[in-house]
Image 1 (cartoon, rainbow, N blue to C red):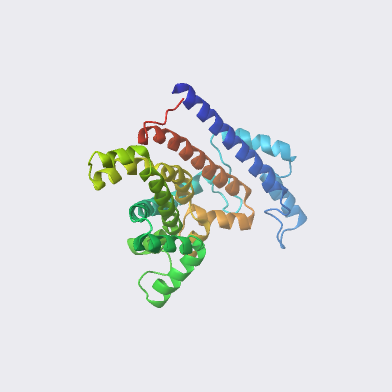
Image 2: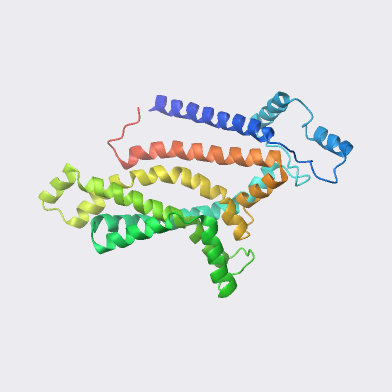
Length: 304
């Protein structure tokens, strides 16, 4: 167990290191820069690049950045003068995390029961309706759904505020938009996994022993059927709690995703790097946690 944990931690650290390195060099390979605007004179541009260390050779910049990162310093924002990336993440992340966690909870509460219902009622009307719903709406982009919801419920009906207000009324539409795709995907995962589980020999044996359908479906079959869902929840959690970029802009949520989009437009290198590292570390960490949850959900899975 300890050796497995150690190997997974080392591989996770290597993955994060590769992500940091690739993002750093790819970001600097894109033409242009944060100070390439019309009013910037050559002297102004040179002074600003010197201030932020962008005048040094790229490999030197990389070494300095990695040294600061080892101390937990993500740098200072270029577009937000006097503010560090650490402070920005600490300020913006709670909004994204709150929306993301609520969206995940909502997606699980809707997606898993729908998938179970469709599997139990396989090839019946309910199953066909659920699969038609998921097949059609799984392809709807979040920004399209968010725009439609905003126009209908905020502009036309006036049920929710158009501009951001940190109250329950403004959380409803972003949560629905966030969770729409996960609901469809979780429903499909649960249904397919449940159908496979229901055809296993131990399930047939349970039925032969006279156990009730409820007990067989929800005690024996469900536990194994949610394993693919758990695998999906890992990266989904990391993505949603960091912020859906387009969705946060549509609903004016002052979260990390919206700020990241603005930083890309402004070519704010430290913020782009810091947010990417934050998201990548979260995703790797969630996948690591999921690996250990497997062993508790299904005792047949042994961590070696």
